[in-house]
Image 1 (tube, rainbow, N blue to C red):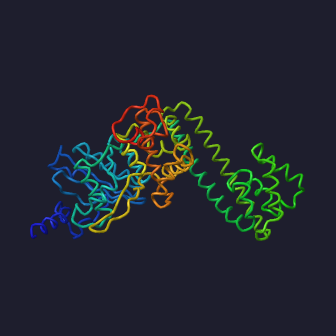
Image 2 (tube, rainbow, N blue to C red):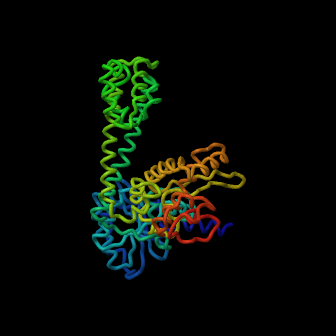
Length: 460
């Protein structure tokens, strides 16, 4: 027992043993402008060393780790004002030491540092945030996390080989525009949902019959609401004029029976009578939704044009649709960069995670790592597939087995679609929806490589 305690104590004090200090705190930082690079490598020329960086919005903490396991005190760096000072120190060190610089992915806050490292010929390394979180207690026997310790943990994980190259490179013009249009696509899709959600509540109050005839998020009803503000305005219109306008809004897809039913519901609605402000509110919400729908369509059309010759994205489109394929390509990258289907699913945050201890068994949940937009659009794709004849029987059986839990069935379908995406985009398989399920459709696809196992190719 005494040996174990002494080992933990030694771990806690490793950072204090490096240089004489006036303060007792092991992680007490010094300003990066006070760091003299020339004094650090005295007697250590040519040795390997790592610098771990904890990136924050306004401040960075960098810790230099020597290969004997000792650390310098953290360097405090204002972000971005003092990035140049930090880069000067790192550049000087790299000329005398075999230096690696590692950091965690932290949104866009570390991009300026990565660009600076690339400009000075210094390679950046990426350490997984989950790995550093799990290693925190192993590092010094204490589970707590704070910026100075996090930087030291990142440096140590880099030293033991738990990092990956993370160079900074500017994507090509087409790839940049695809990323931009995907951001627009996702943003306007969410705006449509927000405004249509608000409208649905208002219509349930003032015109509950309207949704029986037209979809709340459909362009026809939105244009009616933008024009008239609600049922009273439409009911007050001359019948012949109202019918003509509705036919113009809906075109050939809007049948005469629906037009007559909507007009009758506006005249005889049992909803709460609207005030002038109620009409103003409904009209404004509808106009906002229409604007978002129009911008959404623009982004979708531009993506279709940009990806016309993009073999990688076009290969994914038969599985989830072109727009979702673009979102997944931007969010998770090329499936060919992953060594197996499980790794691709993990990048999308669809791998199963469980927290259990002793007699307590936790529920299986998806990890939700990576970009939420990728899972959101894949969820929409799963919803579409759930109503198709090739998938509907499995979906209904899954719901019944899980107690009518539609969400669990949809998540299961998302996981199967992710494996299909890897096989199609990463292995060159031809998509056959029957092969999403074990034992299904082994003769329906041409050019699908055979994979051993109890399921079809898409289920591996």
